[in-house]
Image (cartoon, rainbow, N blue to C red; front, top):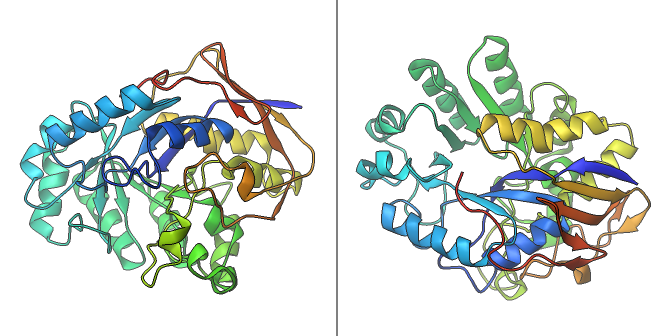
Length: 349
């Protein structure tokens, strides 16, 4: 048995509002606790997006009613709604800017809009970016021009992580995260899994995977799940949406890498607790711990607490499993059962 601090996932899609048929605050936070995660930060590309104060306030009210672990919500940078940024910053944990393709109307591709975001979003709160390939260079350039921190979400390619390593080496204020699916799966798995292996960014080559692992102890700051659940019916449709669940499988997979000496347990804590808390200026969670049994197990769809009920890692061997989670002194998960009540999580950071 080993004990870890309650982990923090800085990139989850909680699907509220508009996607409650595939996940909601109650089921997503139950899945988080089952995965040893006691705080999640929810992305704003909902339907409608969290780009106005009224939408953000309504989503936070639903989280307060239903969440079983602690929740913070991002604000969305939506062209045409950027005048709301100062008000959104009063309650949002950070601002999310989409530089690459995304569903809905959140892509920011005009320089005046990007300048507005960097000018009007308060400097004490972080800007996070969905940036792929050459868009990473745009984000680094903005960080340098405005001399303010930028966090890059779900980095997946060798060229991206190498560029971020160079930027850090020059002292630029950038951080980044990687996902377990980009660390453990590649384009061959995408072919094998079909729609169940389709996400954004797409799975990379084995060279890309190797590059991410090569930077796991220096350039990479966080491991985040990018939990993005869809129903099996949606995935089996003619035009399946991209995204996979990840809250329950992230810790077992990374602990498997620890057992293989790919990183140390201390580094895992840095990537999944210390750095997320520092980068996003998140509060402490006193008397919070995750008890882990280090013995072989198998990841199975039937064990998932997420409403979608499936994972691309179904059938994969893992070296550990979560046995018990304590949040602020209360046992909230034990022996496969979520014990936390709806509404017991704290909302807002």
